[in-house]
Image (cartoon, rainbow, N blue to C red):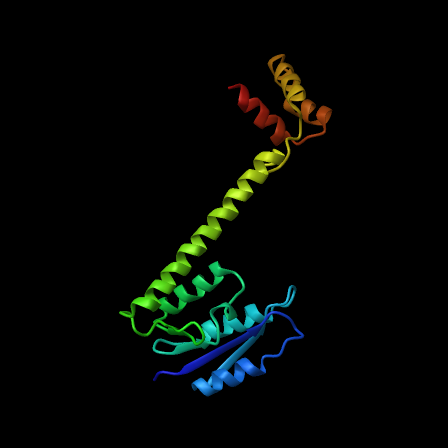
Amino acid sequence: MMALIGFASVSTNQQDLTSQAERLTEYGCEKIFQGKHSGKEESNKQALASLIDYVRSGDTVVVTKLDRLSRALSQVLNCLDTFTDKQVVFVAIEQGIDTSNKKDPLSKAMVQLLGMFAELERNFIISRTREGKAASGNYGGLKPKLNSKQEQEVITKLSQGVSKVVLNKQYGVSRATILNISRKVV
């Protein structure tokens, strides 16, 4: 049994969902999920999760515009992948996207272009992150407990037979830290 399920969302709490809901109702949607994208507001994520949980194979999810699913292109594509996996058709009224006709070259090309742009966006983010880490020298992880001079002192004292317990107390670090330094020597 195929059902038309609408999804309406806006960017801020001050915006109204009425016009989208009316358009989706005119299109024939039996049920409409609604959410808001506002900064700390989780309503859009919750509404989208509820929509995804609700739809079944053969249903059609309808939005007025593609960006109503999410502000991030990668999230839009994740939704489209989920719909495909669940055998749910997707329609974006204003862009003329309709995934029901797998042979429609325009819809197929549009989804593929969106995929390419999402991949490009992801690659830009990764590249900028790497550049930022390289520029700052901060690659993440915990900072070493001891500097290189202190590590050399620990190595020297270990070779002289000083116990790890004495060294961890002397340098104010855990026994595991001293043990890890001792393993570097081997």
